[in-house]
Length: 166
Image 1 (cartoon, rainbow, N blue to C red):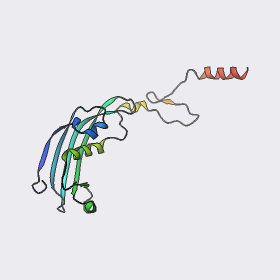
Image 2: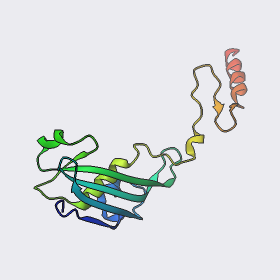
Image 3: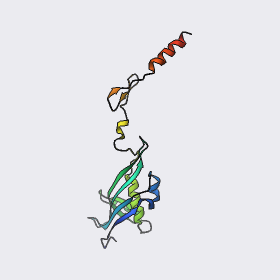
Image 4: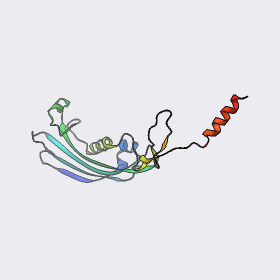
């Protein structure tokens, strides 16, 4: 594939990537891929991976599903031996071939797993998070930038004062 500078493109159902599906909220959708084999400036075998997919994740703030636009454009240096990784140029990540073979589906799945956010947050849900406060400060409403009122705070003070007098 490298010597022939072959390239492949197409789509792959997300449901066919079991390790990726475990990290998602839904297995619907497709991954558009383009794999380009070739050589680098130093003659090293390379694989360029371009992926585009809308992956459904669960927001960790609102617990609502949302579509994460996964985009990958990676350059991988194809290695037969792990010891050769140091010889790769800086713009290239190492990819160790298992027994001299490459599984395109596994490469696609690995690259998508690498771009998933550690903590998925739906765009626009940032407003749910208020400003940090220090002890003694009144909490503030993130939307209105006003102090948050606690209507039962005075009632608690009255109950505490009442129990002290008994």
